[in-house]
Amino acid sequence: MITAILNAYGFSAADYQVEPFGPGLINHTFKVYGNADEYILQQLNTSVFKSPQAIAGNLQLIGSYLKEKHPGYLFAAPLPALNGKFLIRSDSGDYFRLLPFIKGSHTVNVVKTEQQAFEAAKQFGKFSRLLGNFDIGSLKYTLPDFHNLILRFEQFETSYKNATPQRLDEAATEIKEVYRHVNIINTYLQIVANNEIPLRVMHHDTKINNVLFDDNNNGMCVIDLDTIMPGYFLSDVGDMMRTYLSPVDEEEQDLSKIHVRVAVFNAIYKGYMLEMGDVLIPEEKQLFVYSGKMMIYMQALRFLTDFLNNDVYYGSKYPGHNLLRAQNQFTLLNKYIEAAPL
Image (cartoon, rainbow, N blue to C red; front, side, top):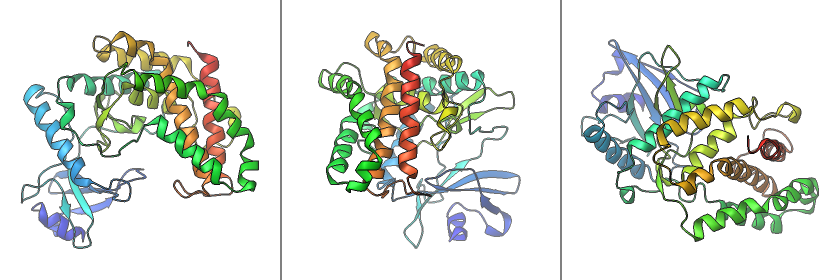
C-alpha cells in the first residue's frame, strides 16, 4: 500500500525508506527519506476526521492566502501528488498526504521552560494574526462542535442520567465538581448568546508538540493543521493553559504533582499578546484567564462523561482510567482558580 502511495507522488519505493515517526495518537505518521530528501507521510484517521476533503480544502485555501499575503511565513502544508491532488486514497479506502520535513527543526513533548511556552504561544498567536483578514466563512468545520462547551455539558448530563449506579457512586465527588463550577458554563452561555467576541481562524490543538523549534529553541511554525477552523481565541489560549501550566499531564495518577507554574502562565500571556495584543478586542482580553478555566473544565467533563458511558470514546487502560483523568483535570482546574488572577 505504501509503495502505491509513494508512486502517486512520483517516488520509487526502492529509493526511499519509510519508518514510523513521532508520538501522534490520531493519525499514523511516517518519515520518508532517500535521495537526500525527507518528507512526512500521514495516514488520516477517518474515524476522527470524517471529512478528510474538508481538511485538504481548508489547508489549500489558507496556504494560498499565506503565500499571497505573507510569502515569508513557513506554512508546512501538504504537497500535491502527480495528479495535483493533496490527498491520495489507497485501494483500501485510506487517505494519505505528504508534507515537507522541515530540516533543522524539532519538537518537544513537555513544556520544561518558560521560553518554550513563550515561543509556542507566540507562534500560535502569529498564525491567527496573519489570518486576521482571511475569509473565515470559506473554512469548513473539520470537527464540528469540537470546543462547544454547551454540547459537552449536555453530553455529560445525558451520561449522568444513563450511567450505572456503580459508576455514579464511584464518580460522586467528580459529579459534584461539575456542578460546583457551573459558573464556567454560565459565562460561556453569555459569550455565545451575546456574540461578545468574534470568531477567528484558530488552530484548536495548541499542545507544545504542535510547534516546531529550531536548533536555538526559537519557534519556527505551527504544525498538525487538521483542526484549523473558525473558533474563539479561548480555544487556543485555553488549551495552552491546560497543557503547559502543570509539570505533569492528564495521565498523572499522583495528583499531588499537579500545580500551576505562574511563570509559565506569564510566558504564555507575553508570547501570545506580543502577536495578538493589537488584534484582540477588550472583551477578549478580559477573558484571557477565563480561557484556561473553560478548556480545563471542558476536558474534565469529557473524561467524566466517558467514564459514565463505560469508556467508549477514550478507552481505558486500567479500571477507572477516565475517572482518574477527570480527577486530574478537576485538580488542575482548582489549582488554576486558586492561582487566579495569576
